[in-house]
Amino acid sequence: MITFPTPVAETAADAAVAELVAHTKWAYTTRRIDLDRAAGLLTDPHTSPRAGDVVIARVTEIGQHKRLELQTGRRATLFVGDHVGIVYGARYAPDQFLAHLPSDLTTCNLVAAGGLAGQVELAHATMADATSIEPVGILTDAGGNRLNLRDSALRPVAPLSSHRPPTIAVVGSSMNAGKTTTMASLVRGLKAAGLTVGAAKVTGTGAGGDVWLLTDSGADHVYDFTHAGAPSTFGLDPAEVRGIFETLTTQLAGDGTDVNVIEVADGLFHAETAALLRDPSFHQIIDGVIFAARDSLSATAGVQWLRDAGLPLMSVSGLMTASPLSVAEFDGTFDVPVDDTLSLAEAGRAAELRDRALALRGAWVPGTLAAVPHAEEAV
Image (cartoon, rainbow, N blue to C red; front, side, top):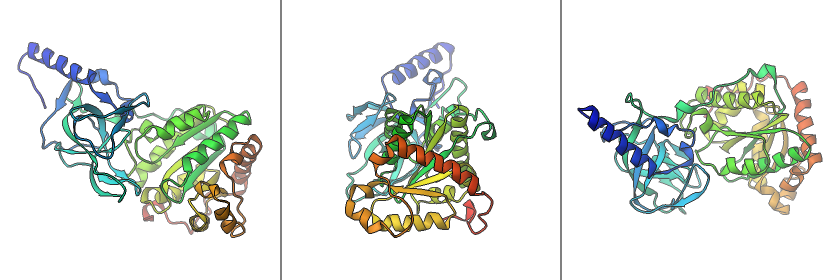
């Protein structure tokens, strides 16, 4: 850590840090960080980063990510030599990168446009080499404590028992199966029905695209896991993911919504997703599930998976519905309706799904899931 022998030098150092902060491009993942607390930098290259630590880094080579999503949502073009303010974290994205938390403050990668510093281990064949960054240092406050995303985590504002609106989960067969589009369409329909709608993405990688889409679709209150202090949920143990899920659903309940829509990122085979969907807390809070699939085969397998897990499936949607042939292949396989995005955006259909979720709450009794593995047994 940078230290200074005299108060005069320390004041100069504070000014230097403030100047660096002022001329840094700050990413979406840092939008809840109080940068006025920044007073120093941890610069020892042997320092071990922690998930959520706020780091200023210099761009050394432009690769896959040529733009950085700023706190405002604007995508800023990156240039070699730029200073970026991002957070450390891991990423699991089958269509992009597998990246883990770096072990020190040496050169690493920008692994998500929303502002995540990690070390790439695997990449999809269509990806260019990851953008390279060189950490300048981890920000600290005046007491030498690291600034971390967890510092700004939401605290639950009310117990769910005081107000529990019907809650619908959107889950999918994989990354890019159409989950967020499905969710945004349902939000549109629920708003058209005159309801106050809450939306939250409870797992994934820190980036603002989904939050902005849900906000634009009309949701009255929108959160993601970064509001709960996590830069991403990859690698977290089931208890931590459960805590994020409970924090965000409790927050929405405290907001006084009429109905909530929750997205669980990635596919059913993703470890954190599978663990959460089998967690008793998920079964107690979620009243209905919509499954987003890429094609008829993944829809068939996903419906069976969800039924085996004892989850209250209400509808199938997602990318599959863009293909009438795929819908025809799936139709009749299960007694599950198929909803494309246009139907979900209609007030009547959205209200039906909200009412169906309420009906399932009464008919489906949590605690009768003896055959479902506990979260820690999920793989």
